Length: 310
Image 1 (cartoon, rainbow, N blue to C red):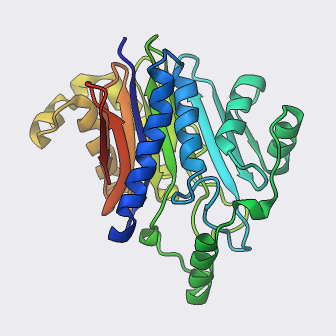
Image 2 (image 1 turned 180 degrees about the horizontal axis):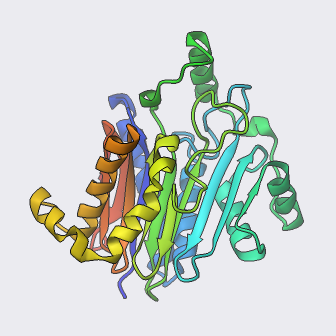
């Protein structure tokens, strides 16, 4: 089977001055993931590699450079899901993990549980050889400045649409037909300490089923949770007949794109929220949709070249 890869760097108001930076980060993530897949590596390895690249890039709201919570600390969430087994590994509200996607991988492969949070997740990291970092190592000047600006406006009010960087994610299909998806985030600026959004929740911010497809979501987490958007997308992919009429009516090129379009419309209509998603169907066909002004994303085309959008 021909491998496939799609990645995203979040949906939101990306200013024109930051578009090139976001696109460069997406390209680097595609290069990291595709290097794995082109050498017959696994989908899990490719998703982890792509998201590691994005977590290490302070342009995105994941890993280093993530938004600060109300108390001025970074709390990170991540998930990695195996489409063959439906097993996921997820972590939430960790403060001393530089790359939460790698900790999520450890939970996936070395724990009977599917989610660990806070101090317990960090203890699991230490016991499995993943080093801790200092909380300050995750904070950049840009993130602190954004936190200070929002505090000046109001601690109680958050503008959902003001994000200039965002949650990251990836979906991969490898040459053996294995499918995996992952999502990683620092959450919203000035969020209440301990707040966990959609990103690490199975079926909300991420889902993968080798029989149907894989999805990673981004946007206003509380809205995405209301409609369980990632699982919704996979369920729609299961029965292409259900999407045929929509595809023809909307002019979507593929069933995969029709599913993506339908999900973000439901997000807007039923949850009154903005966001987006990327997906691959079980044949590796890529699709993306969003209701925000921009979403940084990219995928590998059939000829092996990269398509970058924002």
